[in-house]
Length: 115
Image (cartoon, rainbow, N blue to C red; front, side):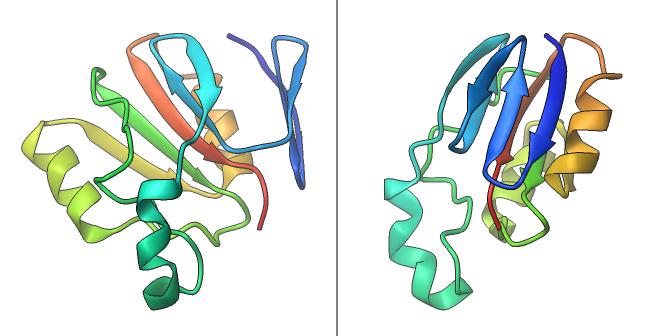
C-alpha cells in the first residue's frame, strides 16, 4: 500500500483519492463510521475516536492520524490498545503517513483527513 499524497481534506492511496476519514484493516480501505462516537462530540469539541467505533484491532501496530492534531482519541481506546498489546501511535496524519510507509504489513490505521 502506497500513501502518495495528503492535503487538507484529501488523501491519495495507491492512486485513489479519499476525501473522508479512512480505516485501513489488513490492507482493506473503508470509510470511518464515526456515528457511534458523535455523542461525545460536545465533551471534546470534535467527534473523538471511541471504543464504540469499529476499530481494526487485528494488528501489532495501530496508527491513528489526527488530521492536523484535532482528532481526539479517548483514553478508553488507549487502554484497550495496551490491554491487547498493540502499539498505538497517535500522530498528525502527515506524520502517520510517513510511519505507515515504513512499518511492516501487520499495521492498521485510522486516518483523519480534515482539521
